[in-house]
Image 1 (cartoon, helix red, strand yellow):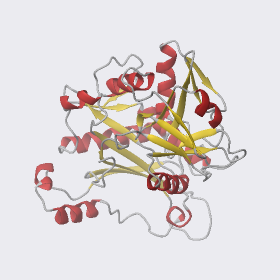
Image 2 (cartoon, one colour):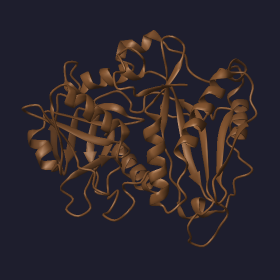
Image 3 (cartoon, one colour):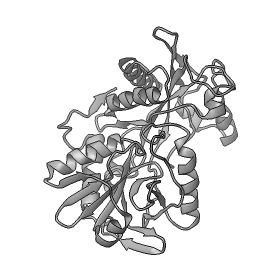
Image 4 (cartoon, helix red, strand yellow):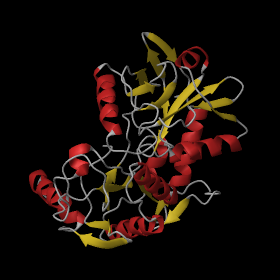
Amino acid sequence: MAFKLSIYPWVHSARFNGDGWDEEYIEQEHMTPEEENAMSEADHTALVNKRNNFPHLPLVNYTTQYGLGCFEGLKAFPQPDGSLKLFRPDRNCRRMASSMKGLMMPPIDEPLLLEGIVGTVRRNAGLGFAPSYDPEWEKDSWQSGGAVYIRPFAYSEPGIGINLSRAPWVITVCTTVSAYFTPGKNEAVTSERVRATPKGTGWIKAAANYVTSTLAKTEAIQAGFMEAIFLDAATHKNIEEGSSCNFFALFPGGKLVTPSLHDTILPGITRESVMKLAEERGLDVVERDLAVSEVLNDAVECFVTGTAAGITPLGSLTHQGQKGVFSSLKDDSLSMSLLRELKGIQYGAVEDRHGWMKDV
């Protein structure tokens, strides 16, 4: 199912007024979840479309016309005790502010955004708009588990003609999400497209970055693969990241390598968390340039990480006709073990020893 356009009723809106942020919670038209589930598909689509309509936001602006916008993505995970918990939301708020600074927008106030996220999820959950924990998810290590997806995004004031946004909104919506990648062989292929160039916006979670990612992933799927992997713009020899996720490779001797965070790579929160978990296991975790030839010839496992992807093991990587096959999908692999640990923390089955989970 992955993402589903079923915007939940409560939305948080914050607008920069020149000195600070004016905020409000907005309750969109809705019925109970049970009543909505009983509606015909056409009627439910019409209702969801009404909720995906914000009359106070201008149609013609620097975001819609020129892609001057950024966003975040995080999840609230249902717990066995019936509660919901957010995974490292403070890091998302920090990155959102950093992205807005990178686009020369007034950066969102981080505590305000954090409280807006918590308040929006809490209000929607109070109406019943949140999944409940299902013990069946444990059978596949929560890979099929449901969650609340939270999307804060920046949206500029009215404008036409290339310019900066000086009075943006940050809107936070919630929707439904489950497994992002379709289970299978998890085969990846390198793309000839370039996601980001030095001195560009690759390190920002900018909306415009995802155009190339979408094109590359679509081409990969059409060619029979699951994921596209981008190489660096300068040499086209080093792995940078996937279509919407960071990349890791395990080499003999317990060396886990992930590409260095040049200004072409998004600093992933799941990436950072996985590095911490791997270091605690005694692995030699290294950030450096990672040649695709080295991965194909020497890596024993590969996986990608992200909010949507979680930890997704890759069974193979193909580059210019050469295919490297990995043991990442085996049940006793490091990839699957890290997946189980991270998902277990998020879904409340493994101790949260780092204090990553925040109550809603």
